[in-house]
Length: 89
Image (cartoon, rainbow, N blue to C red; front, side, top):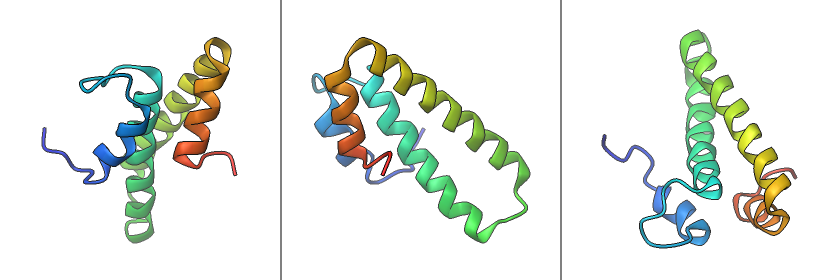
């Protein structure tokens, strides 16, 4: 799959534990955040795209569950993720 998010590597670098880390919770949250932001911009032009909106809602709930997991298991990483990705303003 082609990299549809050009800023993806910039989002991942500060949260990766090592160079090839793509599966840790902070990295998954960063990837989902990038996709959510991309889709949110898409809906400004395509208001009636209901099927993509359903996918967006699933991504948001998945990210929420990952954030809850991270908060339970590692409070420091949780705070770093929120600060890095500018979530929970």
